[in-house]
Length: 483
Ligand SMILES: NC(=O)C1=CN([C@@H]2O[C@H](COP(=O)(O)OP(=O)(O)OC[C@H]3O[C@@H](n4cnc5c(N)ncnc54)[C@H](OP(=O)(O)O)[C@@H]3O)[C@@H](O)[C@H]2O)C=CC1
Ligand SMILES: O=C1O[C@H](COP(=O)(O)O)[C@@H](O)[C@H](O)[C@H]1O
Image 1 (cartoon, rainbow, N blue to C red):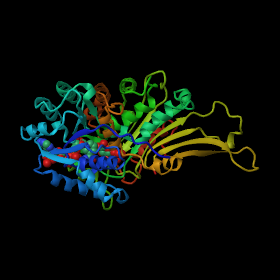
Image 2 (tube, rainbow, N blue to C red):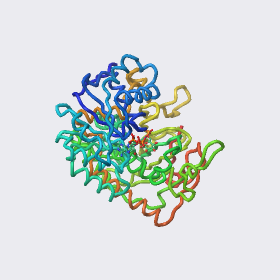
Image 3 (tube, rainbow, N blue to C red):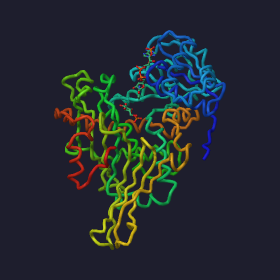
Image 4 (tube, protein in one colour):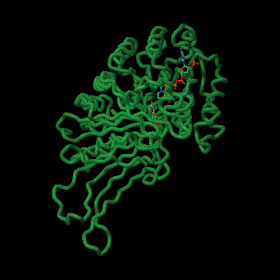
C-alpha cells in the first residue's frame, strides 16, 4: 500500500524557541521527515528564533545534531539532510524586549503561508503575540501555534485567550494537543464514523464502561520544577485524556471540519459531571533501588502533587448516562501503554450452558506502542468437545494490516505542523473548548487542595496505587493489564 503525500504550499515557519528541547527533539526532526517524504516545498523556509546569538550556520549545525540523535539512521540520507538544512535560517530575538523584531519583520515573506510556532515557556506566549502584531509582522492570514500548557486554570486560560485575541482571530490560533496528531486518535474517528458496525452500539445501552489509560515508564526527570506545579491532572487529564474522552464520547459531527468536530467535543466537556473525591485516586511514585522518588525529582519535600491519577467520570447526556469512563495516567509505571478500551455489555440472554465461557466484546484502540485496534469476539472453541466458547482477538495492528506504510506513520508533531500550513484547525483545540476543560478541572483540584489531600505512595514499575484497582473492583470491573 502506497500512502499519498500531498505537498503543502510554500511557507515561512518561524519557530520561537528554535534552540529549545521541544524544537530539537520533536519539531525539527519531524519537519526533516516531512521533507524526506516530499511534502515540504523546496522554497519553504524554517526560521529558528531565540535569544542565543547564532547565525544560520550555527543553527544548522545544532539541528544536524538533532537529526543525528532523533531520526533513525535508515532515514538519514546525507544529501537529503544537507538539502533540508539549507532551508533553515536563524535570527536572534528577545520575546520580552525589542531586539530582533525589525530584522524578523524584514525576513518573513508576505507572499507565502506564514506560521509562527510558540515553542517557548508559556509566560512568553502573550509577549510573542503582541510583538508580532505591533511590529506588523503577522498578516490577517498568518497562523500562530501555541504550545501547552494553555493556562493553569480557567482564569489564566481566559486571560491568555484574551491576550491572543487582541492580535489574532480565532481562525489564526492553533492550540496544540499533540495527542490529537497521533495516528490512532484520528483512526478512532474513522472507525466510529466510516463504519456501520460500531455506531449503533456506541451508547449506554450496549457499552458497559470505557477505560482510557496513558501509562508511562519515565519519571518526571529534569522537568520536576514544571511538573510539581502541574501534576498529572493539569499535565495529562485536562488536555490529552480529555481529548481522548471527547473523541470517544462525542456525537457524530455533521462534517469532518474544524468547527463541526469541535462543537461536538465541547458539548461532551460541558456534559461532564463534577467528580466526587471518592471517585479519584492520586499517587506519587516512591524511590526504587537505583531511581529517585517523585519527591526527590520535584525537589519539594512537602510536595502534594500527583504523578498518578485514576478517576471515574460520568457524562450526563442521553447517550452515556450510566456508562462510566475510567481515566488513568501516571509516571514510572509498569509499561508504556496508551489505549482506549470500550467494554461492551454481556448478551442479554445466553443460549449456552452457564459454564460455556461466554465473554462480552471488547474493542481496544491502541495509541502506542504498536498502534492498532483489537476487537475481542466470542467463538466456538474448535474441536469435538461440545459448545465451549472462547474469546479471540480480531487484531488489526496497522503495521501488519497495511504493510510497511502502516508502521511508518508520521509523528504527531509532523502531522499537526502540516495541518497548520494547510490551514486545517480540526485537530487543534478551540478557545472555548480549553476554557470548558478548565472549568471542569478547577473544582476537582480545588477540592483536594481545600481538603489538604495527599497522594498515596506507589511502587515504581507497578500499575500504580492499590486504590486505583479498587476504584473499578467496587463496581465489579477491572482495569486492562498494563503491559
Ligand atoms: N520539551 C517537551 O517535551 C515539551 C514541551 N512543551 C512546551 O513547549 C514549550 C517549550 O518547551 P521546551 O522546548 O522544553 O523549553 P526549553 O526551555 O528547552 O526551550 C525554551 C526555548 O525558548 C527560548 N527562549 C527563552 N526565553 C526567551 C526569550 N525571552 N525570547 C526568545 N526566546 C526565548 C530558549 O532559547 P534562548 O535561551 O536562547 O532564548 C529556548 O530556545 C513550553 O511551553 C513547554 O511547556 C510541551 C510538551 C512537551
Ligand atoms: O504533554 C505531555 O505528554 C507526555 C507524553 O506524551 P507521549 O506522546 O510520549 O505519550 C508526558 O510525558 C508529559 O509529561 C506531558 O507534558
